Image (tube, rainbow, N blue to C red; front, top):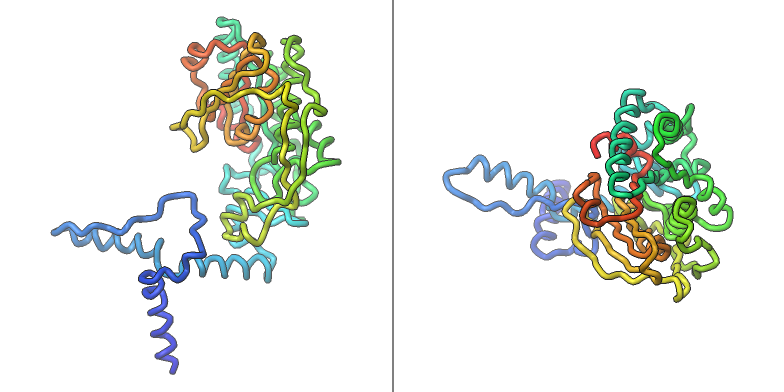
Length: 361
C-alpha cells in the first residue's frame, strides 16, 4: 500500500505535465523559465544538464505546491515563505526584503553610506549640474522613500531603525557640499497618510495617492525657480477609493489572490489641467516605457524626469503642470538625451534603498 502511494506521488507530476491539471496556479517568477532542451548528438552531457534545469523549473504541480507551501507558511505559521524577498509586517503590510539591495539591513542602520561613497556621488551630481547649466537647464534630485520610512509602525518588532538613515546622511552631505537642490518629500507623505494610505500594503511602491502627493511636492519645489508653472493644488484632482488588489510582494508569494491592499485610488485631474500623452516608447533599460506629454499650456517650461519604477505612476500627475514632459525610465544619466530634449528642468528620481547606485549613474 505504501509502495502504491509512493508510486502515485511520482506519477502525479508526469500526469500534470501531460494534462495541465494545475493550470490555475501560475508561476510568479519574473523571469523566463528554462525551456525544453533540444537534443543535439553527440552533446549528451549538455542535454542532460539542460533537461535537469528544465525539469527543476517546470515539473508538474510545481506552482500548486509552492502556493500550498506559501499559504501554510504565512497563514498558519505567520512567517514569510521567502524571507529574503518579502518581509511580513503587521496589519496586512508587507515590505521588500534584503534581496532588493539590502533594504532591511539599510533600514536597520547596518549598512551606512561611507563618506567616500557620498563624496563620489556628490561629485558626480555636481558635474551633471554644471553640464546642464551650460544648456540653461536646472537639476533637481528626488528620492522616493522606502515604505520602511513612511510606515515604520507596521514593521515586525525585530526590525527597527538605529541611528540616522542613509537618506538623512545623503541629504546632509549633499546640501553641505554641493548646490544641487534636493527635494525631500517625506514630510508631505507623512502628513498625507493621516487621511489616506500613501503606499501599497502588498507592493514595493507608493500607491497613486502617494504618487500624487510626491508629484505636487516636486512641482511646489521647482516652482520657486519657475514661478510660471501651474500651481500644485490637491483640489484640482478627483480622488475615488476602490477595492485594492495584490501587489508585487504578495505575487512573489503566489498569494496575490488571497492578500490584497485595503484600498486603491483612482485619481483624475480636472479637465482644464489634464496633459495629453503623445508618445510611449519601449525602454531597453527597464521594462517600463518612456512617455512624453504635452500640457494645456505648451509654452510653460519643459521637464525631463529620469527615474526608476517609482516614477511610472507620476505619469498621471506631474505632466499636468509643465508645457512638455518626457519621463524616462533608466538607471543612467545620459547627457545626449538632455542635448536632444533641451529641457528647462531635469529631475533625477531614485528610490531610497538605491541611493548608493547613484555613483554609477
